Length: 255
Image 1: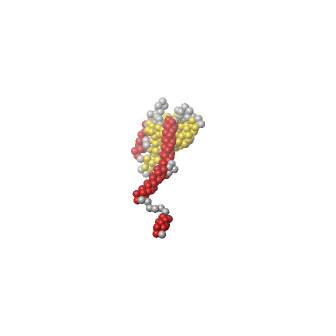
Image 2: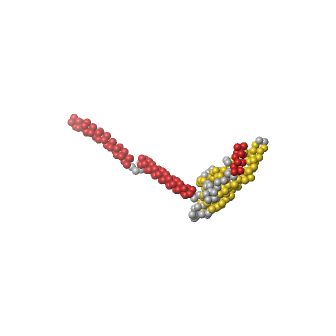
Image 3: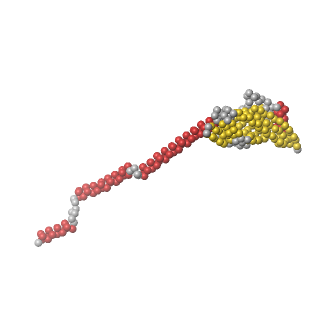
């Protein structure tokens, strides 16, 4: 009975604890394997994240590459536009007219005095020649504004109506200005009277306006330009070698 009771007690303990404890060395080995098993998937997951083309790092790299190519393309486009514009402006500058001074004439000078102040009345006329030496390009001038000085004294300003020139055309224009009862100091009054008697007046002419170009079906309008004729001596103008004026394209200086 005692043996039977001992067997029954052993079976009852086996039923209550179906997993008997392992030896200590086997238990440590199993625990070690669990730790190793838990580390390996973590490393594999990290490797997979790096290689994933849809990961955040890859998206940032593609975005940076796209922005870099856009910047390079825009920069190249702007450089091409700048070069083409520079070449076009150079061609148009070489197409500007040659402007010569054919004649300068001063007349009707009068210096009056009142209350110890002197006043100038005077007329200056200038004949200009516009030469369009282009073979196939026509020039179109809008209203031109002109200012004339004699011996650095401002005589007056006037305007020239717009006109056009075909290729190879020469156009002569008369410019007349008058000043009336303009206050002048004693030194300039004496210089003007002396130069007038000598018929050797030094005249400066400054002109601004817009010029257009047409070549075949291409038309360019309204480019500002200026003309400068400096220190033209009334007494030394030769018909075979007239004084030349300086022209400048894309000048925004006004009168």
